[in-house]
Image (cartoon, rainbow, N blue to C red; front, side):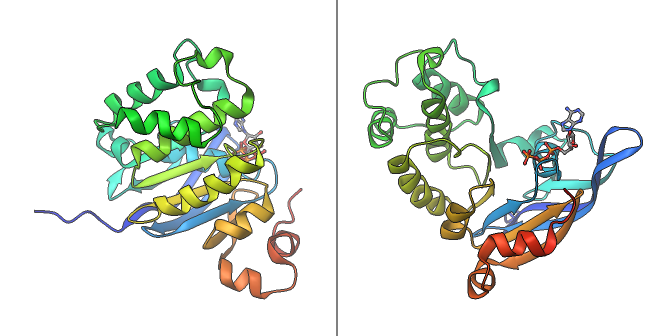
Length: 240
Ligand SMILES: Nc1ncnc2c1ncn2[C@@H]1O[C@H](COP(=O)(O)OP(=O)(O)OP(=O)(O)O)[C@@H](O)[C@H]1O
C-alpha cells in the first residue's frame, strides 16, 4: 500500500505565460509540506494567483511540473488533494451557502456533518443565513462561506487567495485559529497583502517578484528581524 506523501505541493521549474513572449511565472521551484502555513507574498502582478491557479490546472504550464501529494496537477486524481478559495466572482450565487457546501462535499466525496454547517455559520457571525441564497450575502459573508466550506472539507492543501481580505475582525481572529488548525496533517497557503495577519499565522514566507521566488524564509526568522514582513518585501521585492 502506498503511503501518502507529506509533500503536499511540489512545483518544479514552473513557467507560465498568458502571452507567448512574457513569462509571469518564470522558473519556480517550491515544495510545501504538511504542517506548514505559507504566506505567499509579492507586489500586485508578481504571479502569486497565476502560480496557485496552475496548481489547480486552471492555467496551463509552459514548462515544468506541479504535483499535489505526488499526483501531477493536470490529472483529475489530483483534485481531491487541494481546495482553492479565491475571489467571490466564481461563486454560484443561485445556491444557498448550505447548498454550495453540500455540492462541494459531493464533488470531494466528503461527508459533511449538517449541524456543523449551522454551527460554523453561527460562529462566523452568519447565524440562520445558511439557507439564504448566496446572491443575498454581503461581500464578507461570501468570503466567510468559502472559509466555512474549507473548514468542513479539510483538504490536505488549502489555498486561500485573498479570501480573507474584507472580513470583519471577529471572523478574522477565528479564521486565523481555524486555518492554523488545518495544518494538523495538512498545509495552508495564504496569498494576501494583510501583513499583520500573515505575521500572526504563517510559519513560512515565500516572496515572489517578477514571477520568481526572491525569498523563502521561516516566519520566526522574519519576526526576529527589525522590519517584519514589510522589511522583507522592501528588501527583496523590487519589481513594481
Ligand atoms: N487571465 C489573464 N490574462 C492575461 N494576463 C493575465 C491574466 N491573469 C493575470 N495576468 C497577468 O499576469 C501577471 C501576474 O498576475 P497575478 O494575478 O498572478 O498576480 P498576483 O501576484 O496574484 O497579483 P495581486 O497581488 O494583484 O493579486 C500580471 O501581469 C497580470 O496582468
